[in-house]
Image 1: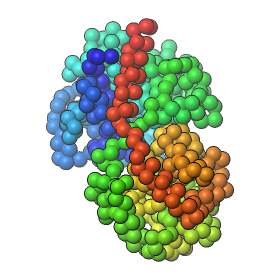
Image 2: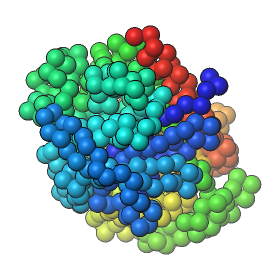
Image 3: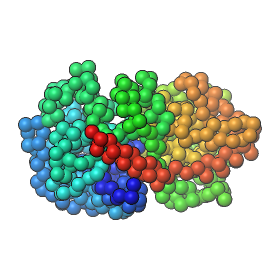
Length: 493
């Protein structure tokens, strides 16, 4: 494993250029960590309207780039930029598909009807770019359904290619609930040939399924935590993919996401009112006071604050929290601060809580990175009652900020949070297993009673939590092992 690998990362989003979720954080951080290990990495993205060319220093790189899609030759342009860490990033510019306000959907959260065309084109264009620029990857690393066609394209079209013929493919599943399932009417445009439209590959109950085909063709598939890898081998969590993931055997693995501690560390965070560390926690008290002021809560250091930063979606369990949050603040001496958006009904509900329960609940509908940092720093607890959670990042941020997580024990939440033990004070958070509003109520009550009745245990847990480290260096080394396994699998075929 001494060889320095050449890796092409193909993804639909990446920080700092464009982000809608945790996928962007991974694609921003992993290539940097791989580069620091000595590997040569490029990232290829769509050129969305939302990407600020001037801010990120985009420059023209290649024009035109011809891409065959079915019987259609599409012509696009390519821009380039370099991250602060020195990772080259290339942007496929094709206004027909990417010059829009949203990434995947419009302002009303309606998916663009031509998404299957958009991301089939992007994936094919990314591989064509590697050919045209002579970048000969050892690994093509695809992410989620948007680029899941890449393993198929490599094996169907590029198996004898002088540039791409030896490339092994890795497909990372960030959330198996999103698979890219569309009408078979779009299949011709992909150029994947009807002989591959079978139930073990791209066909899914008469429709086409991008992720399913990617799982079949990838030399190795991974997801973003060990527990989620095990959960998705079972029908309950796999959204129909369990048989195909089980068919991969040992070539389906879980690799826990890392965290960019240069952005998420209270000792150096410039977005919070006061910095602090395990050695000097005085700044956290200041952050708490300022958070209470910001949300018009009763300013009292002795009342615990529970933070929420989330998409308002059923997956995140925010509908279950909505069933009991008012009972919680009525029955317990506790405050909530809420930041998020998504489901319009939940937006309306959570947005009104600060009016209905003044001094006890504060909410901001939308997203603010600065406010997210301030909540992580100022809250005492952070709740994530997810129905499923492939990895999760906010609970890892919370650990670093000494904000004890209250989580449902699923996926990466179970992997990263250690259960509190009332006898010894061990643990780093509070976990529950049953998916119900009553379980949320009881577990918040457990955390709040611990805050009041066993403050020394809280202090011990905070110190232990802040000492946890989930670095990208460790995760990157696991990905390198996965890359070598994919290369072995490619050679064995």
